[in-house]
Image 1 (cartoon, each protein chain N blue to C red):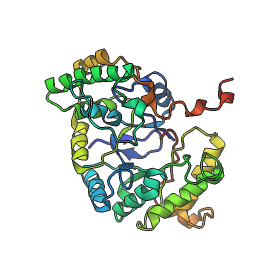
Image 2 (image 1 turned 180 degrees about the vertical axis):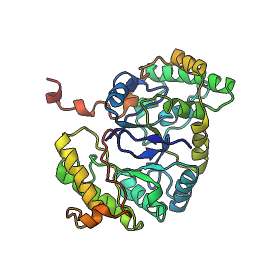
Image 3 (image 1 turned 120 degrees about the vertical axis):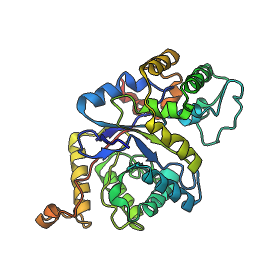
Image 4 (image 1 turned 30 degrees about the vertical axis):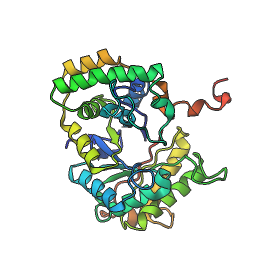
Length: 173
Length: 165
């Protein structure tokens, strides 16, 4: 499969991205079958997987986490924030507070089953300020380097075992 | 940063605004629904428009009595013939179209079954000739979205009156 640059991120992705909205309660409720489908896509050369916090009320992220166990570094994983995940006024939207909690929750969903789920691509529904996106990107980078959220140390930055900086992307769906 | 709008042969509105913009700024663009919610699988055809629709689907996209959806049925007839004449499936035609535009990085397919994935994945290897792309333009003009309801989230940013007054 020919890969393409994902904008100016330096990341190369396949022309097909595997959407996972149909995995879980909203579609295929058989986790093992869903995982087989994900593995088949990866085996065919697809290296781009798109999920969202709201897909099957989080079940999709859990299935993706299970499927990517041991293969996480082969995949560019996109997830989302913005749509409501709870009743309160701060359980949705593009505030810094909500973006951070969404990324944390997404990482948690993946981390339960995937030890290396550390790189997050996070699209929101509506554009936000450059300042806010910068903060989010910084936070993702920190989360990747150190789950405590502290700034990365020099050792973290120089470690060749670390993946490239996290990427924040936004838009519909 | 990337953009994630809907895009398919039946939903071409982003060719006019979003794609030139993301190209200009070097943004990656993931388009979703390259099969337009199943419309470009051939599930609904002129002679068989009554195939069941999941209750989770927005009715406005599948109400066969609406003129906009009738135009989609017409287009699908032409597209199915075009695919057949070129020895590919309608699904392959639709997937290949979505990733042909230079402003598109990737098209998101959302299979529920292994069969659906297998039918979609082969579209990656299909290269559409200029003649085929010209014929698609005749069936659905560039920049045209036959049914605005297929834009899904298109109007969310305008919900607040303050955004436009």
